[in-house]
Image (cartoon, rainbow, N blue to C red; front, top):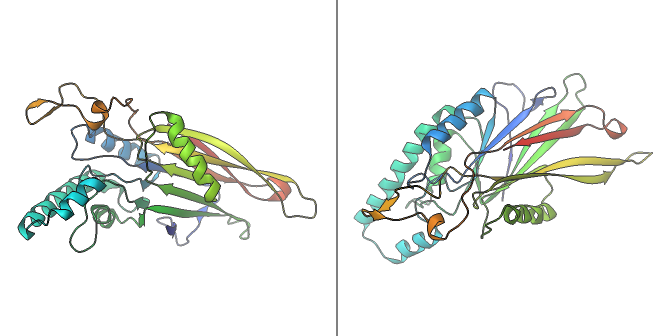
Length: 289
């Protein structure tokens, strides 16, 4: 598990201004290389996110290139070096194509998680790590926690941190409740403010509250909101006229008769609020899908 402290751009401090709003747009499950990948939608989403001042976090499965089982089969095949080189070059081309689409967002990534669809190069690096280098993004591995700090310039001791927990995800779940159940289980193990998970291609969110007791001479109940979010996808599972090897052939989603998913990404907005119980600062959050 990787832990990253986010440092905002264009400032001389690692803190976000107290009167600012941190907007986070998770981007994942793109599956570039698959017929259903929606490059135009991704480009528009990134463009709108930049206009709105968003920061991004990669949720994995950026490429459709080799699942875990595919990689195991290729490793056990004992391929010639020349065959391996051809595969490496194909993965490189997909990374370059995706990096070109995402290029305007370079430097605005809180981090990128590793998915189960990716390629491992001979030097030990992966396609996810190559994309991180191209976009100047921290590599978060399998599970990550990003800390975003706010500070009040008028009262330097007044600070508050927003912790963003994320993982690519695992297993199955054909209903929105499937991914929310997984996120609730994550909330039992990790203390954070925002919980993000991909993999299931579900675009769904829930805002919940946790109650705490203040540590003060006159203890009071403190309410702190949390956002749980399935981060969506940019691959259409059903496409009219889809073919493979010249014959009609549906995607994995179509062959498994899985429900179609709404495409795109959510946006989580986070900002600090003065006061609160016993004068303690608190976070306010909203999520739009």
